[in-house]
Amino acid sequence: MNTLIIESCEKVIKENEISSIVHVRNSLILKKKLGFDLISHESEIEKALDKKYKNIICMYASPYMKYNNYLRILDNNPQAKIFWMMNDHDVEDNILLRKWALKNEKPYQMICNNPREGYRGWILRKKLNGKTLNDYINEWHTINLNALIFSENKIKKDKSGLIYYGTFRKYRIKDLLKYNDVDYFLSSSPKNHIKFNEAGIKANMIGRLNWAEKENDLFDFFGLHLNDYKYSLYVEDEHTHENYAFMANRFYECLMNNVIIFYDINCTKTIIKSEFKILPFQIVNNGNELKEKIIFLENNNDKYIELLEFQNKNKNKILQEQNNVFEKLKEILK
Image (cartoon, rainbow, N blue to C red):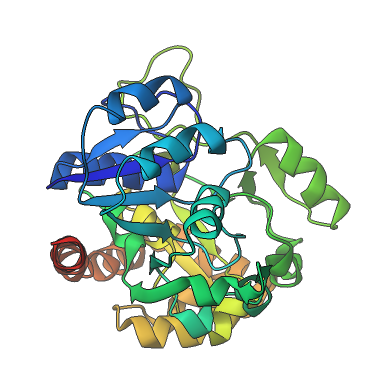
Protein backbone atom coordinates (compact mmCIF):
# COMPACT_ATOMS: atom_id res chain seq x y z
CA MET A 1 0.00 0.00 0.00
CA ASN A 2 1.45 3.35 -1.09
CA THR A 3 1.32 4.95 2.33
CA LEU A 4 3.90 6.82 4.40
CA ILE A 5 3.89 7.24 8.17
CA ILE A 6 5.72 10.29 9.51
CA GLU A 7 6.41 9.37 13.12
CA SER A 8 6.92 12.32 15.47
CA CYS A 9 9.47 10.80 17.89
CA GLU A 10 12.50 12.32 16.05
CA LYS A 11 14.58 9.20 16.52
CA VAL A 12 15.69 6.62 13.97
CA ILE A 13 13.61 3.51 14.69
CA LYS A 14 15.31 0.15 14.15
CA GLU A 15 13.40 -2.52 12.25
CA ASN A 16 12.81 -4.84 15.23
CA GLU A 17 12.84 -2.21 17.96
CA ILE A 18 10.28 -2.56 20.75
CA SER A 19 9.59 0.91 22.08
CA SER A 20 7.96 1.91 25.37
CA ILE A 21 6.10 4.61 23.39
CA VAL A 22 2.76 3.26 22.20
CA HIS A 23 2.41 5.33 19.04
CA VAL A 24 5.92 4.27 17.97
CA ARG A 25 4.95 0.62 18.48
CA ASN A 26 1.80 1.21 16.44
CA SER A 27 3.84 2.75 13.62
CA LEU A 28 6.12 -0.29 13.47
CA ILE A 29 3.16 -2.68 13.53
CA LEU A 30 1.49 -0.87 10.62
CA LYS A 31 4.76 -0.80 8.68
CA LYS A 32 5.16 -4.56 9.08
CA LYS A 33 1.53 -5.65 8.73
CA LEU A 34 0.31 -3.31 5.98
CA GLY A 35 3.60 -2.54 4.22
CA PHE A 36 3.68 1.18 5.01
CA ASP A 37 6.86 3.22 4.64
CA LEU A 38 8.00 4.82 7.87
CA ILE A 39 10.30 7.73 8.69
CA SER A 40 10.94 9.02 12.18
CA HIS A 41 14.02 11.26 11.98
CA GLU A 42 15.07 14.29 9.96
CA SER A 43 17.89 12.28 8.38
CA GLU A 44 15.31 10.07 6.62
CA ILE A 45 13.44 12.87 4.85
CA GLU A 46 15.46 12.73 1.63
CA LYS A 47 14.59 9.10 0.94
CA ALA A 48 10.88 9.91 1.35
CA LEU A 49 11.22 12.68 -1.23
CA ASP A 50 12.20 10.08 -3.84
CA LYS A 51 8.70 8.58 -3.84
CA LYS A 52 5.14 9.73 -4.41
CA TYR A 53 2.51 8.66 -1.89
CA LYS A 54 -1.23 8.14 -2.08
CA ASN A 55 -1.60 8.52 1.71
CA ILE A 56 0.52 10.27 4.33
CA ILE A 57 -0.16 9.60 8.01
CA CYS A 58 1.26 12.00 10.59
CA MET A 59 1.51 9.94 13.76
CA TYR A 60 0.79 11.53 17.15
CA ALA A 61 2.14 15.03 17.88
CA SER A 62 5.45 16.10 19.39
CA PRO A 63 7.28 19.40 19.93
CA TYR A 64 10.59 17.78 18.97
CA MET A 65 9.97 17.37 15.24
CA LYS A 66 11.77 19.47 12.64
CA TYR A 67 8.42 20.52 11.23
CA ASN A 68 9.55 22.83 8.46
CA ASN A 69 11.79 20.15 6.97
CA TYR A 70 9.08 17.47 7.04
CA LEU A 71 6.71 19.90 5.33
CA ARG A 72 8.74 19.28 2.15
CA ILE A 73 7.32 15.74 2.01
CA LEU A 74 3.73 16.93 2.14
CA ASP A 75 4.45 19.62 -0.45
CA ASN A 76 5.99 16.94 -2.68
CA ASN A 77 2.70 14.98 -2.60
CA PRO A 78 -0.06 17.51 -3.38
CA GLN A 79 -2.53 14.75 -4.43
CA ALA A 80 -2.02 12.62 -1.30
CA LYS A 81 -4.72 12.12 1.31
CA ILE A 82 -3.35 13.48 4.58
CA PHE A 83 -4.17 11.97 7.99
CA TRP A 84 -3.46 12.63 11.64
CA MET A 85 -3.37 9.38 13.67
CA MET A 86 -3.87 9.83 17.40
CA ASN A 87 -4.46 7.35 20.25
CA ASP A 88 -5.04 9.97 22.95
CA HIS A 89 -7.85 12.46 23.54
CA ASP A 90 -5.73 15.04 25.31
CA VAL A 91 -2.92 15.97 22.89
CA GLU A 92 -2.78 19.28 21.04
CA ASP A 93 -2.70 19.38 17.25
CA ASN A 94 0.17 18.12 15.13
CA ILE A 95 2.21 21.20 14.22
CA LEU A 96 3.34 19.72 10.90
CA LEU A 97 -0.30 19.33 9.88
CA ARG A 98 -1.13 22.79 11.20
CA LYS A 99 1.58 24.33 9.02
CA TRP A 100 0.45 22.32 5.99
CA ALA A 101 -3.25 23.15 6.46
CA LEU A 102 -2.63 26.87 6.94
CA LYS A 103 -0.23 27.03 4.01
CA ASN A 104 -2.60 25.27 1.59
CA GLU A 105 -5.98 26.05 3.17
CA LYS A 106 -6.77 22.35 2.91
CA PRO A 107 -8.40 19.98 5.41
CA TYR A 108 -7.04 16.65 6.57
CA GLN A 109 -8.56 13.52 8.10
CA MET A 110 -8.35 12.11 11.62
CA ILE A 111 -7.86 8.48 12.66
CA CYS A 112 -8.42 8.30 16.40
CA ASN A 113 -9.53 6.14 19.34
CA ASN A 114 -12.02 8.82 20.30
CA PRO A 115 -15.00 10.02 18.29
CA ARG A 116 -14.91 13.70 17.39
CA GLU A 117 -17.27 14.60 20.25
CA GLY A 118 -15.02 12.70 22.68
CA TYR A 119 -11.85 14.66 21.90
CA ARG A 120 -10.92 17.59 24.11
CA GLY A 121 -13.23 20.42 23.03
CA TRP A 122 -10.78 23.19 23.90
CA ILE A 123 -8.24 21.64 21.52
CA LEU A 124 -10.68 21.35 18.62
CA ARG A 125 -11.78 24.96 19.23
CA LYS A 126 -8.24 26.32 18.84
CA LYS A 127 -8.21 29.26 16.43
CA LEU A 128 -6.25 28.79 13.20
CA ASN A 129 -6.36 31.62 10.67
CA GLY A 130 -9.95 32.61 11.43
CA LYS A 131 -11.18 29.00 11.68
CA THR A 132 -11.00 26.36 14.36
CA LEU A 133 -8.86 23.22 14.33
CA ASN A 134 -12.11 21.29 14.03
CA ASP A 135 -12.83 23.06 10.72
CA TYR A 136 -9.59 21.69 9.27
CA ILE A 137 -10.55 18.06 10.04
CA ASN A 138 -13.09 17.15 7.39
CA GLU A 139 -13.38 13.40 8.07
CA TRP A 140 -13.06 11.64 11.41
CA HIS A 141 -12.48 7.87 11.62
CA THR A 142 -12.91 6.27 15.06
CA ILE A 143 -11.13 2.92 15.39
CA ASN A 144 -9.49 0.95 18.20
CA LEU A 145 -5.80 1.72 17.75
CA ASN A 146 -5.06 0.26 21.18
CA ALA A 147 -5.77 -3.27 19.91
CA LEU A 148 -2.84 -3.07 17.48
CA ILE A 149 -0.21 -3.95 20.09
CA PHE A 150 -1.75 -7.25 21.15
CA SER A 151 0.15 -10.48 20.56
CA GLU A 152 0.43 -13.73 22.47
CA ASN A 153 3.28 -13.82 24.96
CA LYS A 154 5.10 -16.57 26.84
CA ILE A 155 3.62 -17.51 30.21
CA LYS A 156 5.95 -16.76 33.09
CA LYS A 157 5.35 -18.66 36.32
CA ASP A 158 7.46 -16.80 38.90
CA LYS A 159 5.27 -13.72 39.16
CA SER A 160 4.52 -11.54 42.18
CA GLY A 161 3.36 -8.10 43.20
CA LEU A 162 1.04 -5.37 41.93
CA ILE A 163 1.97 -2.67 39.40
CA TYR A 164 0.58 0.53 37.96
CA TYR A 165 2.56 1.96 35.05
CA GLY A 166 2.50 4.88 32.67
CA THR A 167 3.19 8.57 32.40
CA PHE A 168 1.84 11.14 34.85
CA ARG A 169 -1.80 12.01 34.09
CA LYS A 170 -3.22 14.68 36.38
CA TYR A 171 -6.80 13.55 35.72
CA ARG A 172 -6.06 10.11 37.20
CA ILE A 173 -4.61 11.33 40.48
CA LYS A 174 -7.95 11.56 42.32
CA ASP A 175 -8.56 7.86 41.72
CA LEU A 176 -4.95 6.79 42.32
CA LEU A 177 -4.94 8.46 45.74
CA LYS A 178 -7.49 5.88 46.92
CA TYR A 179 -4.74 3.24 46.71
CA ASN A 180 -2.05 4.99 48.78
CA ASP A 181 -2.25 2.35 51.50
CA VAL A 182 -1.59 -0.47 49.02
CA ASP A 183 1.92 -1.88 48.61
CA TYR A 184 2.40 -1.55 44.83
CA PHE A 185 5.01 -0.57 42.25
CA LEU A 186 4.58 2.49 40.08
CA SER A 187 6.60 2.36 36.88
CA SER A 188 7.35 5.64 35.10
CA SER A 189 10.26 7.88 34.14
CA PRO A 190 12.18 9.62 36.97
CA LYS A 191 10.78 13.04 35.98
CA ASN A 192 7.28 11.62 36.46
CA HIS A 193 8.22 10.22 39.89
CA ILE A 194 8.57 13.80 41.08
CA LYS A 195 5.13 14.71 39.73
CA PHE A 196 3.50 11.68 41.34
CA ASN A 197 5.15 12.45 44.68
CA GLU A 198 4.12 16.10 44.54
CA ALA A 199 0.54 14.99 43.84
CA GLY A 200 0.58 12.92 47.04
CA ILE A 201 0.84 9.46 45.46
CA LYS A 202 2.52 6.86 47.68
CA ALA A 203 3.99 3.87 45.86
CA ASN A 204 7.25 2.06 45.24
CA MET A 205 8.62 4.14 42.36
CA ILE A 206 10.57 2.28 39.68
CA GLY A 207 11.77 3.20 36.19
CA ARG A 208 10.09 2.46 32.88
CA LEU A 209 9.28 -1.12 31.99
CA ASN A 210 11.38 -2.91 29.41
CA TRP A 211 9.19 -4.18 26.56
CA ALA A 212 11.91 -6.10 24.72
CA GLU A 213 11.62 -9.88 24.90
CA LYS A 214 14.88 -11.55 25.86
CA GLU A 215 16.23 -14.30 28.07
CA ASN A 216 16.84 -13.39 31.70
CA ASP A 217 20.42 -12.52 32.59
CA LEU A 218 22.33 -11.15 35.58
CA PHE A 219 21.39 -7.59 34.70
CA ASP A 220 17.71 -8.29 34.08
CA PHE A 221 16.41 -7.69 37.59
CA PHE A 222 12.88 -8.52 38.72
CA GLY A 223 10.39 -5.76 38.04
CA LEU A 224 11.74 -4.56 34.71
CA HIS A 225 9.06 -6.37 32.72
CA LEU A 226 5.27 -6.37 33.00
CA ASN A 227 5.49 -10.15 32.83
CA ASP A 228 7.13 -10.15 36.27
CA TYR A 229 3.89 -9.10 37.97
CA LYS A 230 0.78 -11.06 38.96
CA TYR A 231 -1.55 -8.06 39.23
CA SER A 232 -2.04 -4.62 37.73
CA LEU A 233 -4.16 -1.61 38.71
CA TYR A 234 -6.25 -0.05 35.92
CA VAL A 235 -7.18 3.62 36.35
CA GLU A 236 -8.34 5.91 33.55
CA ASP A 237 -8.70 9.67 32.97
CA GLU A 238 -11.87 11.29 34.31
CA HIS A 239 -12.70 12.35 30.73
CA THR A 240 -12.77 8.72 29.64
CA HIS A 241 -15.39 7.81 32.27
CA GLU A 242 -17.99 9.56 30.11
CA ASN A 243 -16.26 9.54 26.70
CA TYR A 244 -15.70 5.96 25.56
CA ALA A 245 -12.43 5.36 23.72
CA PHE A 246 -12.04 1.56 23.92
CA MET A 247 -10.00 -0.22 26.58
CA ALA A 248 -6.59 1.35 27.18
CA ASN A 249 -3.32 -0.19 26.00
CA ARG A 250 -2.64 -1.60 29.47
CA PHE A 251 -5.69 -3.88 29.11
CA TYR A 252 -4.18 -5.55 26.04
CA GLU A 253 -0.66 -5.53 27.48
CA CYS A 254 -1.75 -7.23 30.71
CA LEU A 255 -3.64 -9.95 28.85
CA MET A 256 -0.60 -10.51 26.66
CA ASN A 257 1.50 -11.04 29.79
CA ASN A 258 -1.04 -12.97 31.89
CA VAL A 259 -1.33 -10.22 34.48
CA ILE A 260 -4.66 -10.08 36.33
CA ILE A 261 -6.18 -6.61 36.12
CA PHE A 262 -8.03 -4.87 38.94
CA TYR A 263 -10.14 -1.97 37.72
CA ASP A 264 -11.04 1.12 39.71
CA ILE A 265 -14.82 1.41 40.12
CA ASN A 266 -14.90 4.59 38.03
CA CYS A 267 -13.92 2.56 34.94
CA THR A 268 -17.22 0.65 35.05
CA LYS A 269 -18.86 2.42 32.10
CA THR A 270 -15.83 1.71 29.90
CA ILE A 271 -15.84 -1.95 30.94
CA ILE A 272 -19.54 -2.35 30.11
CA LYS A 273 -19.24 -0.68 26.70
CA SER A 274 -16.17 -2.75 25.79
CA GLU A 275 -18.18 -6.01 26.14
CA PHE A 276 -15.08 -7.87 27.33
CA LYS A 277 -15.33 -10.66 29.91
CA ILE A 278 -14.50 -8.98 33.21
CA LEU A 279 -15.74 -10.36 36.53
CA PRO A 280 -17.20 -8.10 39.25
CA PHE A 281 -14.40 -9.45 41.48
CA GLN A 282 -11.92 -7.48 39.36
CA ILE A 283 -13.61 -4.13 40.08
CA VAL A 284 -12.49 -2.38 43.29
CA ASN A 285 -13.68 0.70 45.16
CA ASN A 286 -10.57 1.49 47.17
CA GLY A 287 -7.24 0.30 48.49
CA ASN A 288 -8.65 -1.80 51.33
CA GLU A 289 -10.84 -3.80 48.96
CA LEU A 290 -7.94 -4.29 46.56
CA LYS A 291 -5.67 -5.55 49.35
CA GLU A 292 -8.32 -7.99 50.58
CA LYS A 293 -8.84 -9.44 47.10
CA ILE A 294 -5.12 -9.88 46.47
CA ILE A 295 -4.67 -11.60 49.85
CA PHE A 296 -7.58 -13.90 48.99
CA LEU A 297 -6.00 -14.88 45.65
CA GLU A 298 -2.56 -15.35 47.22
CA ASN A 299 -4.11 -17.85 49.63
CA ASN A 300 -6.34 -19.55 47.05
CA ASN A 301 -4.23 -20.48 44.04
CA ASP A 302 -7.12 -22.37 42.40
CA LYS A 303 -9.17 -19.15 42.39
CA TYR A 304 -6.19 -17.24 40.98
CA ILE A 305 -5.88 -19.75 38.10
CA GLU A 306 -9.64 -19.67 37.54
CA LEU A 307 -9.64 -15.85 37.35
CA LEU A 308 -6.65 -15.81 35.00
CA GLU A 309 -8.30 -18.35 32.70
CA PHE A 310 -11.52 -16.32 32.67
CA GLN A 311 -9.61 -13.15 31.80
CA ASN A 312 -7.83 -15.00 28.99
CA LYS A 313 -11.17 -15.81 27.36
CA ASN A 314 -10.98 -12.28 25.94
CA LYS A 315 -8.06 -13.12 23.68
CA ASN A 316 -10.09 -14.39 20.72
CA LYS A 317 -12.26 -11.27 20.80
CA ILE A 318 -9.13 -9.09 20.88
CA LEU A 319 -7.63 -10.82 17.86
CA GLN A 320 -10.88 -10.33 15.96
CA GLU A 321 -10.93 -6.67 17.02
CA GLN A 322 -7.34 -6.27 15.90
CA ASN A 323 -8.11 -7.78 12.50
CA ASN A 324 -11.08 -5.41 12.16
CA VAL A 325 -8.72 -2.47 12.75
CA PHE A 326 -6.41 -3.58 9.94
CA GLU A 327 -9.36 -4.06 7.59
CA LYS A 328 -10.86 -0.69 8.50
CA LEU A 329 -7.53 1.04 7.92
CA LYS A 330 -7.18 -0.57 4.52
CA GLU A 331 -10.68 0.64 3.67
CA ILE A 332 -9.93 4.21 4.80
CA LEU A 333 -6.69 4.34 2.82
CA LYS A 334 -7.72 2.53 -0.37
